[in-house]
Image (cartoon, rainbow over all chains, first blue to last red; front, side, top):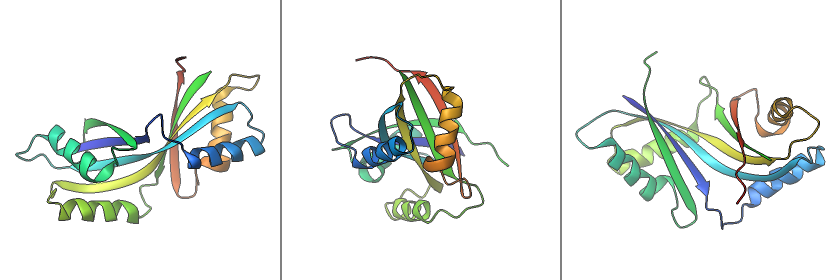
Length: 84
Length: 84
């Protein structure tokens, strides 16, 4: 079993209204030192090792479902899952 | 300027319907090897260094606004921002 962490973020050139709203809220709470906020998604997947190469499986899943590659970038990390 | 990455995730004991929905979608796309999906938020903040200690500022912001500590955990990393 592998633990895969996927980070999906908006591309640099894409406006982030959710981030702007959070920054506005932080400024109104007097955290004026915050100069920029960008918000993305963080996914943690547990994947059973099979016949298919895990990297190509993850890339496929990201391109097809998890990220909208027109406006989003993604990156991922694969870790050995620790059994509890 | 510091670049701060904040990861907000649901606590282990809290159900994640969004994650279950994504897992269902992945299964229907024939990615049966995926055994669990948990979805969280990923925030990237640019913070100007001031008089206040950056760690305590980040913790305060997380507790007050960015994470709901009743159902969510957070962790963060501070990096030196690279000027472009």
